[in-house]
Amino acid sequence: MQRLLGIVCFEKNYRLSYFLNKKLDINLSKLGKSVEITHKKTSFELPYFYAQKEDYHFFLIENRSPISRIFPKFKKINYWLYITNDNELDKRDFEKEISSINIILTSLKIVDEKVFNFFSDILYV
Image (cartoon, rainbow, N blue to C red; front, side):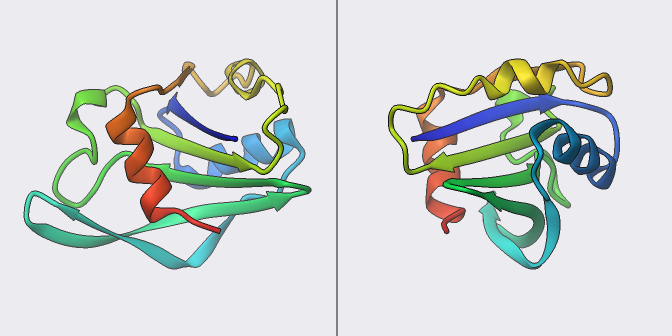
């Protein structure tokens, strides 16, 4: 099962990852690797945070690039949290858990197929 959440939060990425780690009992950490993204005929690399716990894989990535937002359609979203899990029956409500963190204004489950497929293609385990 794969999920994509859009997070509205004005804090720096390391602060957000700290609070997500505490709330979700995970260990998001910034990897030395970056994701290569091509946006409007320009390629750039974007660092991301990653954590694994049991069957879950968590990827936290900012919704901005050196040029603009990765997805201008979602201009109010500051971060993306992409979660994969091998268990199709899992019903854990990450959106509700994340929304309860006081530095997060809101989190939204993203069902836009173009955005979802973008993250499925570039973030893999």
